[in-house]
Amino acid sequence: MNADVDRLARDMIAAGALFHQRGWVPATGGNFSARLSSDRMLITASGWHKGELTPDAFLAADLQGRPEDPSRKASYETLLHCQLYNLDAGIGAALHTHSVSNTLLSMHQQSVRFAGYELLKLLPGISTHDALVEIPVFENDQDIARLASTIDAHMKKQAVAAYLIKGHGLYAWGSSVAQARHRVEALEFMFECELRSRNWRESHE
Image (cartoon, rainbow, N blue to C red; front, side):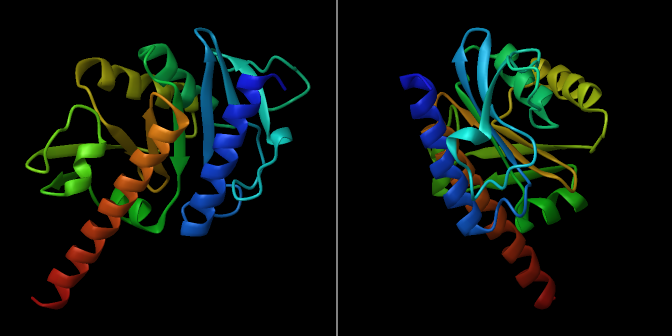
């Protein structure tokens, strides 16, 4: 690995260990990527447990999702990462998690709204807790190219800070692996708060 690849791999390995510790990437669920250049990315290969990543868990691919080493298989959801990098040159990393909270919320709502949380300030364009942020929920689709196209059309019409796939999980991103990780942590905290708040309200009605 060259220095940039090694650094990005180490950052994603650390994110995977943290996310697994928090219960956000069970089994081989989730996938991580980081931009290498204007037309290349480093992404987790298919089948790796995200809490047990090593440098061998990553492969380089172009932004159409084609691995540079044709003998290797990228994540099944590679095209969702490609969509983000092709949409916005400022995106430097994308992380995908499968927490209990984000999965349950996505099963029952068309979007998740956050208001009043201090951690909203970790999301793009937000400078105060006194804000409303809506995280859209997209229907799951095993045709990943079609799902990526649906998400792309939505994001070209309306900027979003992250998104959920129904029953599947969260996609969040940032200019770096660190920023993407911070946003995942903030979002997962708020998802858990929302889920606990709803459960509390239901138990006291």
